[in-house]
Length: 345
Image (cartoon, rainbow, N blue to C red; front, top):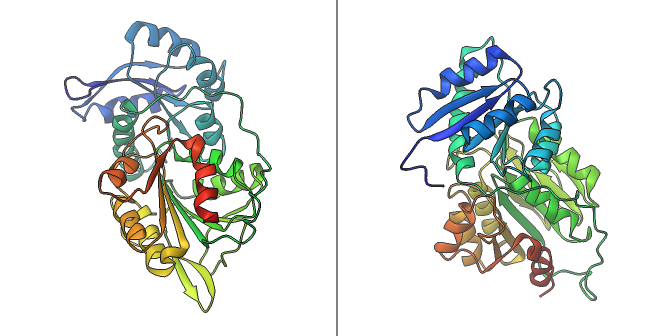
């Protein structure tokens, strides 16, 4: 869909009249967005979708008659539509993303004008991203695959794997970890994600995969089979102490509009690990990570980018590819094998 010629048509679904009004009034300030209808529950929403043909839908999770996750699961096979989930802080947002939603936001504190303003600004940005994203209809949930490493790869030639992602990244990361053997070198992840949700995401991956996954803290030691996810409001960097690699987590200004920033992670891995690293850039809007990946490649690291076909939003991997930072481009389903191949060379 081209959003240049006309406004993005939005349907707002929430059982709270007050919250629906806050969203409608807030989005009315954006000249590129038009709220064409609101709905109080999934059945009301279905009728409004047929009547107004929105480009993007915002959807609450806790609603009467049917919850938002079940609604998304039933809706998307019939009406492929980018959905942004708006919910209280809980792991349920990841179930919604698994069902096919493309983005999520945490509900603001309605007693705080500042929280509401931040929320509305974020929502407008995410609507514009969602309007240009691919719809992924959920299939059967991916099961953890207990892969064996290829023969002769118990000692890998690389020691650190760094991954960056944004919109669509939580599902892409879950797919990768479920299709990789747990004895591979430690993985550092910078995913654009709000505070608290990064911890919930790490706990979810820890429970669903063969890896030990945690939200990174300063001083974590990198060891095979461990995955460290940058906290939602902190930059994650790689440090070296003697022969050991450690994590460093610190607050800082946003880089490329994000904290954590993929560039910050990749640049630190390039400087510290150089040709002992592998960098992977996955689906996401914008250019974060491209510059850092170029540094990785120039320092001898192997670099992999997700292709356009399998990306929910082909932004970050596209920019990285266009500036020559990506050595090999592949679909999400091909990346696990490709990673094992470059690790064992």
